[in-house]
Length: 170
Image (cartoon, rainbow, N blue to C red; front, side):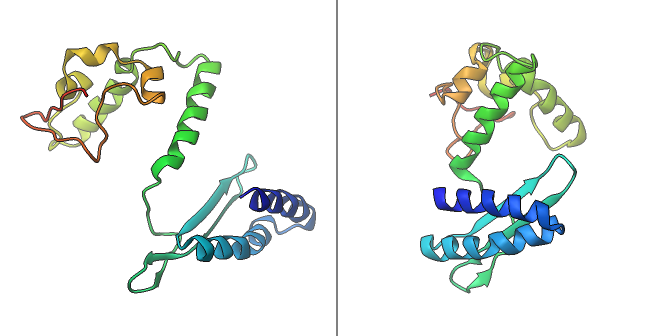
């Protein structure tokens, strides 16, 4: 992975000087992405959005390994654990900007989003974290979530019941 990062950094510098930034960058990255997707037998997608508004994206691998259907940029995949890096960086940046503190309760940050979602989707049976997890959710902090020690169940292992759906802390 270090080699891929070094390769991308070097080629990025060369591409900026060359001109056709987006197309050249994809052409330079695609062989490395293809190689790693083949080596690790997985799908790999790379995307970047630059401050000048430029965007690039490339993908390799299969969306269906049985049928050998190639992945496309329109396909969607679960990110899995890689989101922890993005989430952690975003939390620290938001704290640096004064938008939150890691010791804040999560409720004032998440409930407004849930309320908007419920307002736009009449089938949604809840509009607050308390409705899902009970009053104890107020004590869960941003840091608890970031360290994965909140007690809130994962979305893929939760067993909600009742109306609205509830799930006990673990």
